[in-house]
Length: 281
View 1 (cartoon, rainbow, N blue to C red):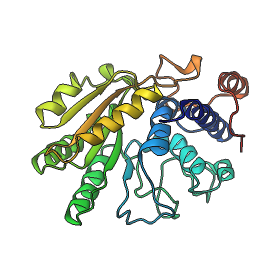
View 2: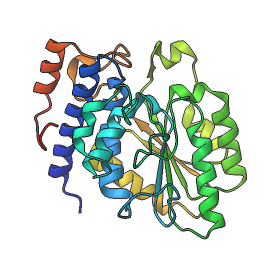
View 3: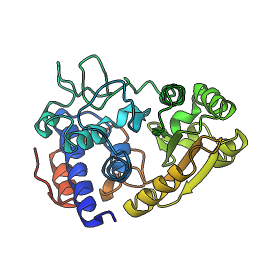
View 4: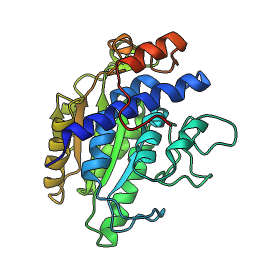
């Protein structure tokens, strides 16, 4: 049984990390990072079953691919707290010669990161390739991927979605962060995508709707449910309804904080809403 009190403490600390990272360099993407904090904590603390050490091959272990790479702050924070690299390295976020660039990269050999991402629309294709590789090698582990809803406006996704169903890539669990917002406004104003769950279903995917996408227990239970549906001939997608900027009241219910850092006063307000639990770096 997960210790949700402990996981809540991790969530609060990860939020603090996100806020302090983007504030320090006055750049980055806090909105989507905060909206997906519970997802990353649930995935990495309760689902992934990671091996000791890290290698790019990833055989005989679950894999995760982040497609919407601009939410790197939450990814970096969780990787650091899981021991992939020192938590203190979060201090180097977006600095010249840092391994922690604005979008995750691989050329610096950062443990936990297997693809460079942030060129939206590509992560699902890579995840499908990794899932097919596992099938070819009789590797029974699962491949997870996270996408933003705005990036579904990119056509490559739909080719990948069609391919995964057509080739029965049923060891894949993709999650769509459905917050209804992107950098230029509401997704429905930029380019409406209509009924996303119905589209995945029509393309031949097993669809799971997660209404409480910022509820740790709901996320853990949904990810576990998704794993029970693997191996049955269909790729699985979780449509995860989240709130951009979750956990910081003035960042919620707006797209304004998609890619903007808080100033000194705003940082203090945000930190006051998220108590220090594991120790700031």
